[in-house]
Image 1 (cartoon, rainbow, N blue to C red):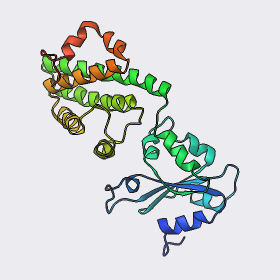
Image 2 (tube, one colour):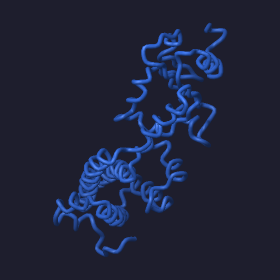
Image 3 (cartoon, rainbow, N blue to C red):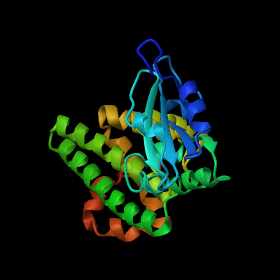
Image 4 (cartoon, rainbow, N blue to C red):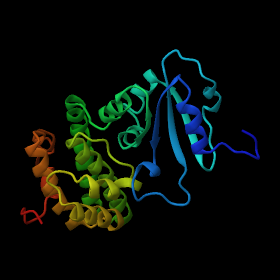
Length: 250
C-alpha cells in the first residue's frame, strides 16, 4: 500500500479471506471486548497461515499503524501462542473473524481460555504463597510504621491475589484494563464481584490493613475448599498476623 492509500482493516480482511493459504483471522484487544472500543482503538489481528503454505501476505508481518497491527503466524505457531505467556488472556477473549477450518480456530481459542487441571493446580499453589507473602509483609510494615512499604506490599498482594483467584477458576488473569469487564460479564464463582472490586481498589490505593485481613479470611476459606490449605498451613503462627482479631468473614 502507498502512503496515499494506507492499509486498512477492511482492506486487509478482504485480501486475506480470498488467499487460500490463510486459514484464520483472529481479532484481539479492545475490539474483541464489547463496550471497550474508543476512538484510539486499533485492530489487533492474528493472521493464521496453513503450515508450509506460501503467501504474499507475509510481507505484512509486523505491520503496525494507527488502525491496524498484524501478527502473521503458522497454524502450529498459533496453537502454541500464549501458552504459557502474557498473550494468553488476549487470545482467550479474542474474536474469530474468519475460520477456514470448520471451527478449529475457535476451538484453539477455547483451549487457551481454560487452564488444564494440573496447570491450574500448580499455579494456584505458587500464587497463594506469593499472595500470603506480600500480605504478611504489608501487615508487618504497617505495624512497624513503614507506611510506603506497607502500601507497596499491599498492591503487590492484589496482583498475586487476582492471579490466584482466576487460576482457581482455571482461567488466565485478565489484563488490568479488562478486569472490571471480565468480572462483570464472567464472575468468579463464589465471589461477590462488586465487593471484590471495591476491596481491590481500596487495598491498592491505601493498603488498609483491616480490609486486607478481612479479605484474607475469604481467600483462606476458598483455598481450603479447593484443597490448597496446606500452602497456608505452612505459615504456622504467622497466619495470626494476617487474620483479623475477629475471625468472622466481613
